[in-house]
Length: 430
Image (cartoon, rainbow, N blue to C red; front, side, top):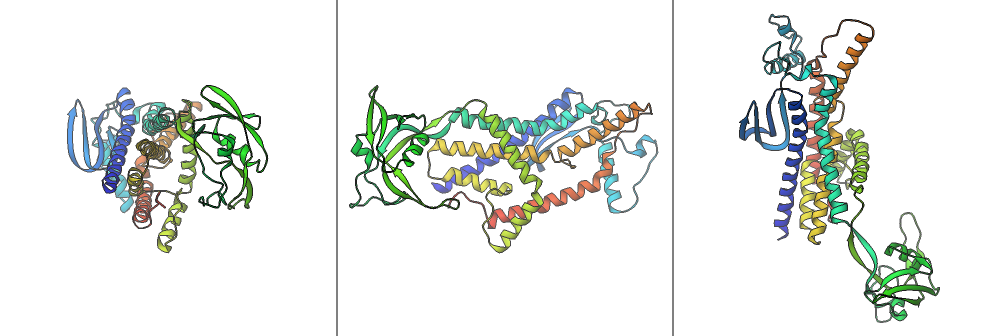
């Protein structure tokens, strides 16, 4: 049964990732069509096409490897110099020059003529920026929706002030088990009963169990009043917290704390509707800090893989690692609502990663296309300011060698993370 649950978790992750990619590309497609750009293809995945259907001028379909997607827009770059000059030309200078020429030739195939205005590069700068940011923004919005479902729809597990049960004894320490020699817990002696709702502790009104517990822990050996609501009426009970040893941590030494033996009722408490937006914003900052140090983080991951050291649980993951976590979430022994919440959180985090990653200002990522559009707009504004002739559109195909290096770097980092996720995975199971 656990194996089946694990497989279900992986499948849910793959489907969720495919939906995220589909929405990302839809974020590009809708504004592109709205602005009149001719879109030849809208594809989810890479590799061989397994299904497609043409509607109007656009072919919609799925490819065999659901690890990405793309839309094919006419005239992503200006036509090559040989076309504008009306005569053939060729690239010289070796490998990278050939790559530039191949990119120009592929781009020219999307142009249906030099007078065609339904091309991407002829759009105003702000429209090009909107088209390219549409994909990442769609991932951000999806993450906000998922986080909102988690926090405001399902809620956060919270220990409430309702008493669920009582301890039978005062253990020797916080983590110790009861023995026959241990004295009875103070809560039982004070007359506290399961179902009571704690209203105040030592004269201080409390709304969460954490608040009540903090006062109790600070009052070992002191008699304090606890007001509880029982059967619609309030009663004041006096309890003397026993003194037990709190274990030492990395930052604090062992201390003596108060203990009365109350187990709280745990419920899902729905958070304000804006919590999803706040959580998404916090996650963007966290992921951005990882992306900024991505080469270093990947190097550390590779070193941990070679040395067998435990990986940083907050470090980068590949799709394989995310799939393993999804499988473990689905297979863990926990209520179904907990697993659903954790799975939604994982998908939301993946969408935040897609949002931040695609904003990196390097081609072929969306952020790189935004930078090209802004540079083109800056050149035009500069020429207009000094009343000079309008410059030619920025030819981003000249950046193909840089794009090639970036792609190779991404492939290498992806391979390292996949190997690490297979042989030295991050796991939620301890």
